[in-house]
Each structure stands twice: as C-alpha cells, then as structure tokens.
Amino acid sequence: MLRKRYCFFLCLVALTWGLAGCGSSSENVKKEASKVAAKSGVSTQIPEPVVGAAGEKVKKYDLNKDKRPDLWKVYVPKGPKKILALVRIEIDLDANGKIDVRRFYKDNSKTREEFDLDFDGRFDVIHFFDDKGNLFKKAYFMRSRNPRRPDLLKYYEVVGKKKSKKIVLVRKERDDNLDGRVDYWEYWENGTLDRIGRDTDFDGSVDVWEKGSR
Ligand SMILES: [Ca+2]
Ligand SMILES: [Ca+2]
Ligand SMILES: [Ca+2]
Image 1 (cartoon, rainbow, N blue to C red):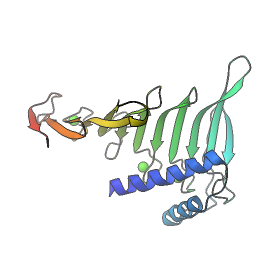
Image 2 (cartoon, helix red, strand yellow):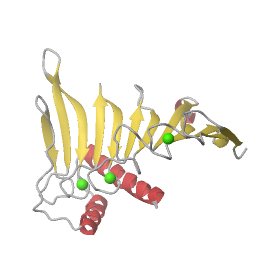
Image 3 (spheres, protein in one colour):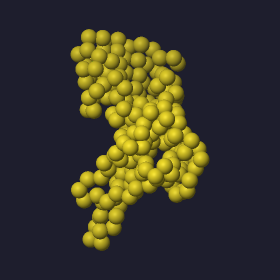
C-alpha cells in the first residue's frame, strides 16, 4: 500500500518536474493533479500556501492552469552583484493549500527532497543527496511524529562509473519501538540482504544476528 502510494506520488512529482523544466502545459499533469484534488475534496477557496521568508525572492507558477499557483521557485541574492540563486522549489500537488514536495538546492545541485505522501501537511519521506547530486540516504517518518526521529533510514552508495553508474541500497536501520534509537539493521551486499541485526532489549546494541537471503 505504502509502496504503491510512494510510486504514484513520485510519478506525479516527476511529471510536475518535467512540466516545470520545459515551461509548457501537460494534459497528464492536469489530469493527475485534478484526480488528487478531487479525491481530497479540496476547494479552490483555500488560501495559497505561504512560501518564502525574509530575504528570499519567490516566483510562482500555475502548471495545471487552474488559476492558482501550484509551484514556487525560491531564490536568494548571492555575491556582490546580487545574482539570484535557486535555493528551493515547493509544490502543492493537490491544491489543498499545503506544500507536498520541497526540493532544496545548493550551488545549482539538489541537496534534499521532502515528500508529504498522504497530503496531510506533514512530510513523510526525505531524500538526501551528496555534493555530486547522488542519493545517499532516505529518512521515513511513517509512524514517528518527531521530525528529528525517523522510524526508518535507508543508506545508498554509488557503484560503477558513468553509464554503468548505479545507486544501490547498502543498509536499512529501523526504530521499531520509536524510542529514537535504531533497533533493527539490514546489511545489503550486491543487491542481496546479507545479514540482519536485532536489538531485542532496546539498549542500542545488537543482541541477535540473522543470516540474510544469500
Ligand atoms: Ca497539498
Ligand atoms: Ca503526510
Ligand atoms: Ca528503538
């Protein structure tokens, strides 16, 4: 269920990114965004989200042509010439007045993406990128209500170079009892689960190791 929703959400985001990139309209985005909006029963009377802070310049875009902005690009002036640098893109996919996607940039490279998968105004998944733009960590907040305490972390590494480059999962860490400490570890090697560690008494260290599927 979660996986299905996550995939659907990422497809919708990808369509929106594509639209934002080419600056033209797309029937697919219109259709999908209207479906999401209809499902959540939102009204066009809902106020726009407040985007941007002091010192930031915000540009608004109406990608689905419903006369409401749904994508905001946020810039800050940099250097002696005060050239505007993109620091963030925010999207309200379902027009409910709450931002569902935020992508952060530094020196034109994305550093972080945040997703509100169930459109309740709370971010559920955060993707982290290194200074080359490669995904290295995902943090999930599906059960945890604490923004500092994810209940699941996934770590990734880059293997191969150029065309054969792949981002592969190397480790999962879960906090099953939501006390802020990891109590379940999965170690992955070459796409296969190698071993599992469990902290059964929740003191922060592994008590039981299990072999994975190799
Ligand atoms: Ca929204
Ligand atoms: Ca949410
Ligand atoms: Ca724990």
